Image (tube, rainbow over all chains, first blue to last red; front, side, top):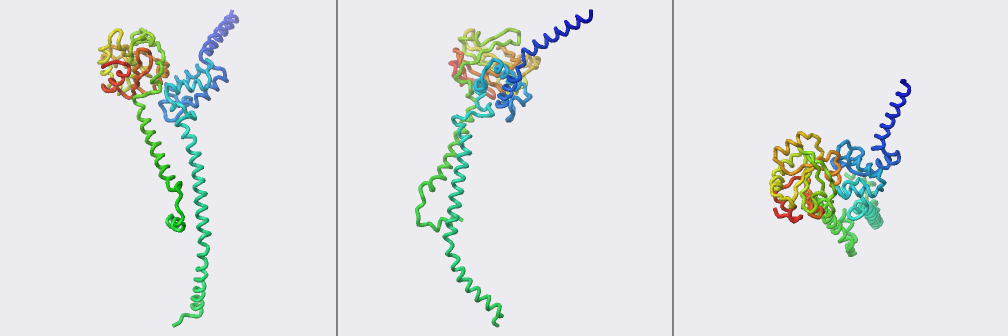
Length: 160
Length: 189
């Protein structure tokens, strides 16, 4: 008697579990996709934390919404676009490279290029100044003659 | 140091690029800063949803009924997200109550949505304390809050009779800001 009952209960349990899982769970690939997208979406009530790392209720709800959209077959751009349309581009941890945001991406590159250009021109100028001041050594030689005389006098003893 | 290096080639004229580049860079930086500051300040009254269709919703009221945006079609709507734990919400609750008392059957509709507040007892106490006669909807999964991009209450959306978001306010309504928002949906306060 116990054998068939046990089997039936196990079957029912498996059915309930699979139903519960089917409602919320994603395939490993979908879950990986959801996590990857979630890592680029900022928790709106935190400081620079993606929704995948925030325990806040809002982040968890946003992650659930994101998972549902992944299951519905929406693309990465569609999903990030959905959140950006509601929370603004500031919700994206990887801001789109367009409009004013281009300054963020191009600014440092332009800064580095300008910096290198300025440094090289500055070095060129200082080198040119250094070579231009080479004749300065000649008076030094003249001075050296004078120094030699002074030293000679000193070595011969001070004139009393 | 600079006077030394510049004094030697004094005879050679300084190129216009060298002369004007540093002030131009400084001017560009100041302009960028000004634009950034002015744009950032607009967050109070303009949200990403302004100019777009208001996301649909169908939520339960505190009394167990259901209200959907579709059921309010043809009426201008003031949609206010609030919570019982939110202090600025207490300041704007009387303003919204006064507004809701003026609403007519086919005119303006004032609707509240409870944001991230599981304490129903506190929610009910809040509505009683401020005698809020307009419906407050429950959004237990925050689906509607996310659809409207709500992150911190209070946030208010002014939706015109065609279902388009025309105005937005964050941080607590004042009578002036309410009048400004209502003006965007053609309602004279």
